Structure formats: C-alpha cells, structure tokens
Length: 452
Image (cartoon, rainbow, N blue to C red):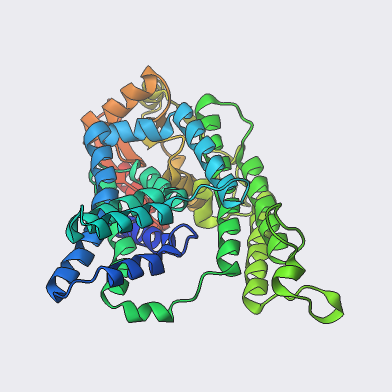
C-alpha cells in the first residue's frame, strides 16, 4: 500500500534539488572558473586529465554523501526525527536561513568560493600539491563554500529524510551530489561547451534576490515548526500563508522595478529607459514577475478556504473543521483521542468498535498532505467515523512522544511517518497502511479491510 523507505518521489526530490542548486548565484558563476582551472592545469596525458576531473567530481559527491552518512550513523532515523522536530533546532535553522537570506539580498557579503579556488590554483602552480590532490581538495572546498545557496536544498532534503528510515539521508545526499557534480565534470572534460552557457550578469543578481525572498519563506516555515511543538498558536496556517503571499508579491514588484535593494543602482541605470520614460523590462523578467504574481494570487485562495494541494503539507495544519458538505452522515469534524491510545481502546471495548491509529508528527509534511487531501474527503470521513480514532504524535518534546515512537517501532517495525494502523479493542493489530498515498480508493480499501 505505502512504503516508508526510499521512494521514487524522494529520489526525484533529491535529483531536482541538485539540479536547481546549479542555477544558484553561489554556484553558477563558478562553472567557468572551475573549467578554466582544469584547462590551465591540463596534463599532456589525457588519462591523467580525466582522472583529475573525475577526482574533482568525487570530492563533491564525497562531501555531500558524507553529510548523509554522518547523519544516519550519528543519530539514526529516530534521532533525525527528534533532531528535525526539536523546537530549538528549528529556531536555530530559522536564524541561519535569515542570515543566508540577508546575504543573498545584499545586506552583507559572504563569498569565499573564488578566493579559495584561486588559492588552490596558486598552491598547485607552486608544485606543493599534485593535480589529483588539488582536484580533490577543490571539489571538497567548492562544496563547502557553496553552502550559502545550497543550504535550502540540503535542508529540505534532510527534513524530508527525517520522515523515513536511516537509508534516506544517505541515498538522498548521494543522488543530490551526483546530479550536482555531473555538469562540472562534463564541462571540465569538454571545456568548449562552456562557451554555450549564458554569461553571468544582472539576471544572476535577480536570481540571487529571488532566492533571498524564498529563504525568508523558509524562515517562516521553520519558526512555525517550533510554534507547533511549543503550542504558541502564533505562526498558524493562515499567518504563514499570509507571509508567503506578501513575499510572492514582493518578488513580483521587485522584478517589475517597483523598488530596489539598497546596494543596487536604480533600474533605469541598469536596463535603460524605454517608451514614456519607463525602465525597460525584458520579456523574461516580465514573465517571471507574472509567475510570482500568479503564485501570490493562488496562495490567496488558501486564505479563502481553498485547498493548495501538495503545498498544504508544508503549512501548519488548518485549525477548526473543514468546510461543511451536504451529506448528513459526514461528520463536520473527526473526533480524535489525542495522544491517548488507552482512552481510545477503552471506548472501543465499550462500543465494540475497532481503533484507527494515526501515527503522525508535528512537522511531518506527508502527514499534513494526507490530512488536507485524503482525510478531508467526504467518503473517507464517513469510513473513518466507523472507528474510534487515536492520533499519536511521535516527534514532540517530552517522554510521552518518545514512548509513542518506541511503541510504533516495536509493534510495527518502523518510525516512518505517517503510519496508519487498525487494531481491535484488545490492541491486536488488524492491518496497517504505511506512508502517503495519492489514491483515495487505496485508502478506502485499507479502511474497509480494517472492518472485516
């Protein structure tokens, strides 16, 4: 039915994150620098040249993969869940992302990639390092110094990995690293292709600013995680969504030249003036602005009660009941025994019903998606209402949550979230459903099987 392990969707997420990282302003300008490095130090032996390029790529892959291996080995899947959902950790990540966002928005400069690579270049010229050693060192240092822009993608990947088994951070980071490294290796091997790449320019500055606003959106997300764990009820679903709408509109107005950042010259000095004395806005820039405007308008439908599909999984859960429907037997709101399995079992024995257990997490994105897109469907609510419902959080701060996570692992052999289980009034397992599904019929079949 579902799979808590390494899924195709997770691999696709990792590969997409690696590809998008290549377009960031910390990485893209380093492509010609990297290629020129290998051109200057090309050996008379083609084999040795290929080895050096391969070692450079290996340095990138090894550094990223080491992060995944370290996470899996040091804290494991259970530890990663607790780490990723710890309120203090989420606040610390929010502070880091805020610093990275301010850097990308130009409030201060933090860029050491080119200087470090230049230093390696000079050391190699002096003969103190071999071509292979310098290539490996360059790959490792390049990976570390690109962290300013790759951190959001890596962070997203590790947070996604925290919902599954210990293999996920390793496989995820390996996939990310390979996709990230391959273009550098190819271009360094065939340097003439570098001439076909677009040159760095104002467009890259715009990408940098847009990424800064996106990282501000991530700040709101991580603060909302802490809010959920500590029950502040401040950064709610609607508050975070409103912040994202404001940021989407800010990007729109920035791209249209309505305002500029302090370190930027006026738009007319950068692009010149067009008809009626207005700054020239290129087609690509105008289209990008319209896309962000459309995103902001779409997000606004979420404030009006509409569903945002997959994006709902990244937002705090909606408070209150879902919109009512015109079916008498559909409950306005499902009645959950929150973190109280003994109470649910006692009621099940009294009413001779079975118990539906929802193993979930405060910051579990897949759990939020299921709640917003599957649990809210009328036919699903009717089927679930035939059970006594127990919702057990396994990633909160305290002994209760650790016990519930341990119970899930001991009884069902996994800590992956979400996990759904049906048990009889005596607590004996009837059936289980692991992971996310986009098929309401599959989940209906699972609910029906639990009643047989």
